[in-house]
Image (cartoon, rainbow, N blue to C red; front, side):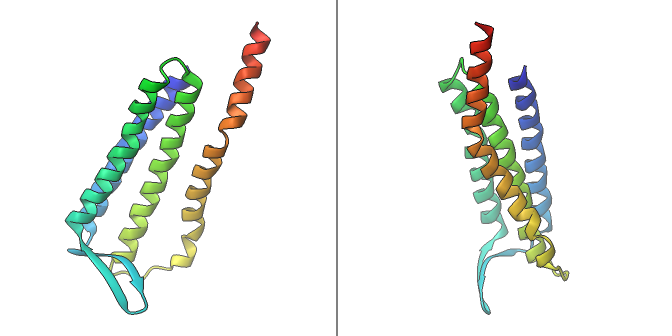
Length: 146
């Protein structure tokens, strides 16, 4: 049951991150600043940025199907892995909007967004290291049923 819930939430997170990618792509200037050191900036075209992010999203979200085919009968791990990809999609959304804000002509106080970036990254790391706890609880629950 939990696997189906996580799979549905993963699907909606995938739709959300693709929507965010399209929104950000439409708002980006022709050349996107991807790195800035002092006054020197490294630029790539927004089309290349779009396709790089799209390839990363495709690989990350295709892992749900790859892991699902390898661990066919371990629903606990598949549900946990879907949750990990959900947190990764959230991190991608935050990162995309950060790139959008950095490349916009508006003034933006980047010190106010730090907790969102680090929070999404921390959530992903916290979810990744939670697997041993989830496995112990699942083993304990299965031992109690026997």
